[in-house]
Image (tube, rainbow, N blue to C red):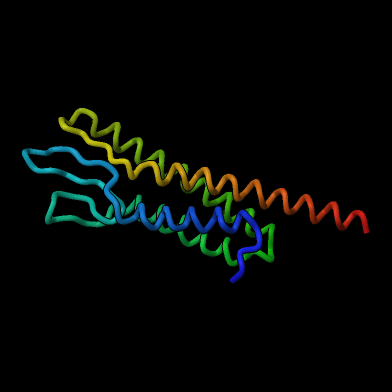
Length: 147
């Protein structure tokens, strides 16, 4: 696969960031002397973790849609739609993380991890890819009109 356009690179970097985010802890707080961690694939007290269903579904959908968008470079319309849906799902993921953090603010020793920057950076990269796809569509329509 040859990376011909910059939006493919944006999509690829966003994909890597979201895969890395799946394995990191989003935030943690103390419950009865034990540290309770919240992450996509590891939620719970250390030693007894499970998958957080909402975060893992949203993160998984964003990853799958981004992979499909990378390989649908010949169909700009589909690529733009997939990118837009990924942006909406990523916003939903960020809102759910924010709601969970606000719900845990009454707990003592709340620590928010730096890994929460990854979905925000992925959102920015997906937005830039969406803009690049729109620019390519405009260039193609202008060149078709000139003929």
